[in-house]
View 1: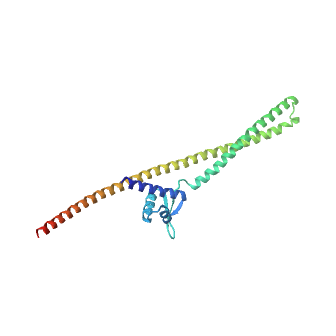
View 2: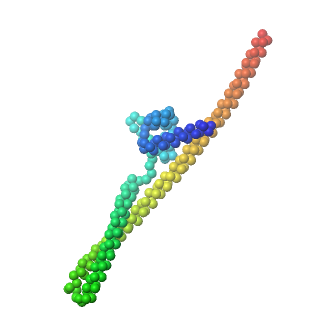
Length: 221
């Protein structure tokens, strides 16, 4: 019984590995690859579809089975866009630090010049410093917008991780159902074997009794 259970489990495991390796494969080709009858592979496919592990589609010539991948395509695209924005923000943040230091230096120089000359008309560095400060403030606003995008990305990432966690739990439940199914099937087979063994013993006993009766009858004659 243990040998039969092992063969069923390794057979289904091999079927799942084959689907994951190909992503999409017809049941006919899968049966040939595994060296198994088509009806067995078909039953496995429908069972795995009920568990949510695979999806089945119907082609013109054969039934096709493919991996049931978790996640939302649009969500993944949005995540890629947000990752790109985060990388740009990191580069921008480094440039922003340099701009802030340079603007502060220009402002300090302008203030010193103002103290010495005491007239705005001869402060050539003041407009330059003011422009750099305004530019710096604009970059801060842009940086805040990017931070909002980063928070949005974090929310999307959490949703994606949650969907993966849900799928992993479903897979764990599917594996448990699969083990329970195999165990139940083997129990039924074991009970059937016991019944057949008892039936065979009864038949054998009946045949022996008939043979003995025939032998005794022939000896009397």
